[in-house]
Image (tube, rainbow, N blue to C red; front, side, top):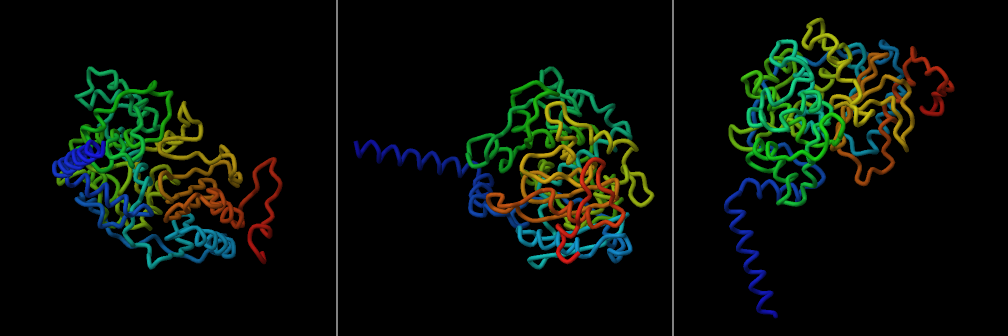
Length: 398
């Protein structure tokens, strides 16, 4: 019996060694990610594709009081962020930076993994591509662009389905299993093959699942529709035009496919520029980048999940265990990881928090930071039917 076990273990070791020899880059990434579960350094994301930016100065900085925001409310929000493993808290109003707080030696221009904030870039680019007639309409079947699926049932999935995480494709699952689809999608060296090999598991347009396949396939549609590499298209129609600093997309292999679901290395403060686009219906400082009305389309709830739009969480729909948002129009860009970008159109406030999600969640509440800041706006009016907010209970010594 011992001899059988010995030879079985030896055979498994030989098979494992052969697999590592065939796919060294995959296994290098896989084991590195296992060793650094709390966050991967920028050096992990190689090879990369450059998103050339405009590299313009940050938005104008003004005192909070000039934008009718209470400094004590902002400091209370920063104290909450500090207790929850944050790297930055940046607040803007009417296009002005009114508050910035940084931790762990970071700053506005520090290059950080944008995590799932990267998804919203694909959504904005889709609006631009429709305006430029590269894509016909939001409900256009993706089989028109992905020739491999032209005569496949998956070709009937629409652009809108991808935007709303409603493709019906089977989720990749955990990245811990090196032989599973999740690990192959994230760490593998042929992402397109992995995603095109994903089977249908539900009905497109009605089955909602948060997964990598949908934003990744949307980026592939954009590449096929425009004839440009994804990084080049981001740079040309968006990143340069908002004056953002140079950024990078992680590739599955040299000159390979860019990850669009995650892993965009960008100056963390530049997400405030993206926030201005979302608050101003695609307009950035007088320049119309995205077709008018497209952001409203992004906020249409998915049929399978009324809390979700186009890679956006719709904050007005209360989540159990979370305090209600102070205004009905709050929405946020978020996903895996701890980065959050809250938008409050009625007050023209954008709030960026970067960092890691506290281990186990702790007492983290997605509404706490924006509510502190909203209640600290002098022109904030409590929602009809709600008791008036008592700022003294939220901000000490108010």
